[in-house]
Image (cartoon, rainbow, N blue to C red):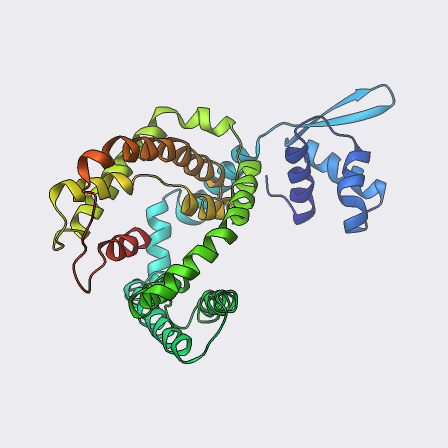
Length: 337
């Protein structure tokens, strides 16, 4: 059932439309972009019918085509054929072959902690440098926001540039830069945070609209209770991680319990990275994105409700943090790791 690149593009068009299509529909969607003529499109459609991916029906003078297989079913079938042909149907054999061929090695695994440490060091250096520059130069807060935003983009771009040569985490570097700036120039960091909050209002709307437009709700029903159970298990692990991060702080047990509840909501990170597998064309892309959105729908209201119901009981009116230590910094880094 191997498809050529052109045949796969036509199938993607049929799957996207989600209804019976004609040759003219394909021409309007792809013909002008690809430079295809109508006979070429009809030839591709006939081949797809022969391969069993399309069903055809003649209605009057027009012939319509319907997908005989869903996108996910095709990808699963191709994956099984790939494993069966090259690795005897065993994913363990494929992983072992990758390890023997250098795809997975001790050096590759060692790059993970190295990228984390290097990202923290680079981000801390950038944050300290920015703090020194902001101390010496009189700049408007809007200019400082642009400078910090530019450096953040450079750090993320640096990760792509160093890919394949050395490990470096751009996102962790950005977080570390913000932490270092907050430690060196707390008053400046507070003002910049207020500026970023205004920018985030529009960016957040755009992010969630794009994610919502990508979600296929049919996969939510297919995920069922297993996905919900998985989300709650991950929440328990997340709360345990926050508790470990707060062990050596001066926070009381009540305050630690509140922090564990406050870290339950999940939204932004899931919305940002949940669509990556789908964008990579992985067969699991739809279900990963659906579970990510489910985690947002479950944890966001649940966390807000828990915070609203417990803050008066668990927190004092004035919370005193230990000198030189801001507990949530470690918790933030734990979540990113």
